[in-house]
Structure formats: C-alpha cells, structure tokens
Image (cartoon, rainbow, N blue to C red; front, side, top):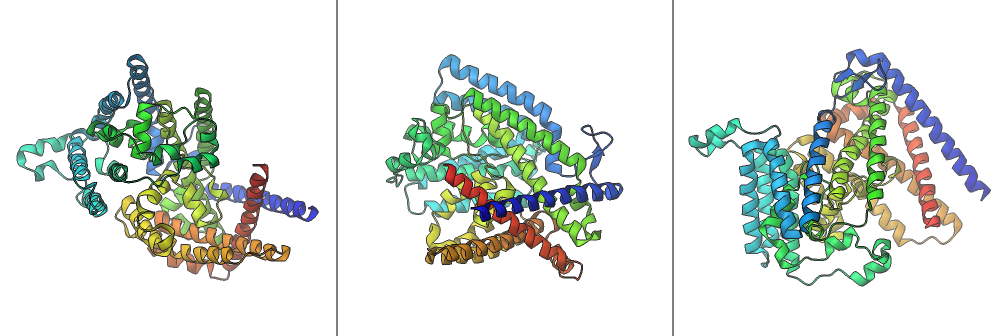
Length: 522
C-alpha cells in the first residue's frame, strides 16, 4: 500500500513538473515569435496580449456567438411556448421545427435549400421503396456516398447548370456553403433509412437485461440508448418527422449526432433525464470553459505556430510542445462548439450524446480516444457501419472501411486519407496486444505487474502515434511526416523523443490509477 501511494505521489509530482515546464516554455516561445505569426488579433482578456484567432472554425464560431445566442433564445422560446400551449406531440412539433429550421436555413443557404430538399426527398423515396428488401444497405450507402462526393467535387452545384432560367438563383446562395453542412445531413439520412429498415425486423435489443445494468433506467427514466434501440411507431416515419430530423436547427451545423429513433421519440415526449437545474449548471460550466479557452488563446499561440509554419524553425522540444498544444486547442475548441449546440438541444427537449465525455489527457489507447472524441459520431459509426459490416468478427478489416469513410466524410483531401490509414496501422498492434492480454490470464502479482507495465509502455507509444496521426491529418499534412521523423531522429531530437515517451508512460500510469479509483468508488 505504501509503495502504491509512493508511486502515485511520484506520478503526480512528475505531471505537475511537466505542465509547469510546458506552460513556462509555451509562454516564452509565444512571446519570442509572436511578430512572425499569422492570425493574431488585439486581445481583450489580458491586455495588451494578442489573441490567437488563426483557426477559421473557432474564429467564425466565436465571432458569431452573440447573434447565434439571440437566435438560440428566440427559437427556444417559440418552440417551447407552442409545445406547452397547444400540447403538441411528434407531428405538431415536426411542423414547428420544420418552419423554425427552414427560417434558419434560409439565412444560411438561401436558394440552395432547394438542393437539400431535392436530395432529401430522393433519399426518403428510396428508403420507403427498398427498406424491406435485401438490397437496402447497398442502395442507401451508394446513394449517400455518391452525393457526399458530388457535393464536394462540384462545390455545391450551380443553378445555371440546370438551365439559364434558374441562373439568377446563384445570386441568392446565403452566407454559408450548404454542402459543408450537408455532411451531417447525410449521416441523418442514413440513420433514418436504417432505423426504418430495422423497424420491420425482429429487434435484438434485450430491454430487461439493459435495465439491470443501466442506472438511469433503474431510476424509472429512459436513457438515450433505449431511445435509440427501441423502434418508434410506423407513423413516426412520416416525411414531416424525417424532414424535421434532417434540419433540426440546434444540431444542424455541427451536431452532436442523434439517431432518428431517439429524435422522433423525444418529439413526442421531451427528455426528462436533465432537470432545469442540471441544464443551467451545464450552461454555466460551458461559460467557464469559454473563459478557459480565451485565457489559453491569449497566452499560448499554438495554432498560429501551426498555421504560420513557424514550427519548422523550432527546436524538437518546442515542436513537441506546439504539437501537444495544438491537440489541446483542438479538443477545447470542439468541446465548446459541440456542448453549445447540445445545451441548446437539451433546452428544446431533445437529449443527444455528449461528444467529449472525457478529457483528451485521460485516454491512453486508440479505442478509448475514439469513443470519447466526437463520441456521438463514434456511436453512429458503430451502429450503422461497424456492426452491419460484421463488428468484432472482422475487426481488423472493418477499421479500414470505417476510417476511410470518416476521412471521405470530412473532406476530399489526401492528408485526411493519410490520417485515416495511419490510424488504422496504429490500431493493429493495439488490437493484437489486447487479444493477447485477454488470452493469458495472469493470476500472480508478478504477472499482473508485468502486464500493467507493458500496458503503460504500449499506452505511451499509442499516444505518440495518435499525436503523429492527428498532426499529419490536421496540421502538417503527409508531406511533413518525413521532416517530423527526421527531426526527432537527430542527435538533438532523440533525447526529446525519449523524454516524450517517458512522459506519456508516466501519464498512462496516472490514468491507470484514476481508472482504479473510479472503479473502487463505484
């Protein structure tokens, strides 16, 4: 017991020293190189510090936050007032949300709403025609991937290609490119198709067994998993509910992703798992997280280093710090964006999965990371792609299909395919190691110690590989990977690489203790 406490104490001290060094060095390089960086603007949080708004997605979200919040408030008040005043159920709320959401889409996309309606209507007809046939999976996937690719290749199309009489509509394309948002609509169209397809088959979901394991369901409430797995009545698969689901305003731009079954059932009966107090606390925590982001971008210019290409001129130690910092920035950025829209949806009575349920610094293997980074998308991929492909029976093959789809779904870029295939390569040794560990049950204390140490080493390697894959996919591109590797294999880079692996080893051990503490307290 004393040895265990001593180990925990050492790990905590090491982690504190590591972050103290990271913060000190990040402040130093940000101060020394800020004049050469792109995307810095006058700050307000810590004057006269500049603010890093070099990331276009974060800059747009942050800049539009005031008007978005006004729209958020108006839509919420209208929808909730009409629901309570007229006791509206699924059909009535579908019509309300279609009207509200198309008002929203008219500002975003203008006349391009016609493209969205046309593709959505074709998908609805195909699903209704082929849902009960054995060809359904091929039809729904081919149709949706075809339009996913065409939307990108033709940049959202042009009305003039249909005919010159329609050319004037190209002057009313709105403020936001519709085909970017349509990626999420594709996921919803596939979800509707499969949920309708499975509604005509015997359900494999064991509700009684689930209740025994689920604390939410034991308390008399209905958890999200049950809402998703339990089919809805046939009348819920109407075109109005389908359309309301595709363009539901709170989740339209970025998600989180909700299945059709879960959405349709909550139109009938609004969620009750989160009380008004819970939702208010959720919103308050979001405000604190926003202030943390503002503090971070005023002090550390991680993303500006990546955008400006300045990381190529730095010492390998600083390259590691920038790479690590970029991942922290990305995590917090998506954390704020996704939680904002989930907060909006909860107030409107629709519960959706949390996209970032665990901090990025508490994930030591690829499987855990992907279950907790864009978690609602992970649930979607498992339900509609991974399991239909054969699930764990073909795991080594399925991960290549799943991640290739993820890359194509994000964008048609070579660096994203490189990221996807690198991730798959890194998955293979992890799956083999996990299978080997499960095959050999070590009952002795020595055997358990060896497995734990090997798992910590594997965790350190996995975190390093995860950093490399994400930097290739979202920062440096495939052309930068050879430069990155060469820098860390030089004489001055090898000690940094060793220190990085040691730090991730220590971090993994610390995560093991956090996991054990949670298991013992539950």
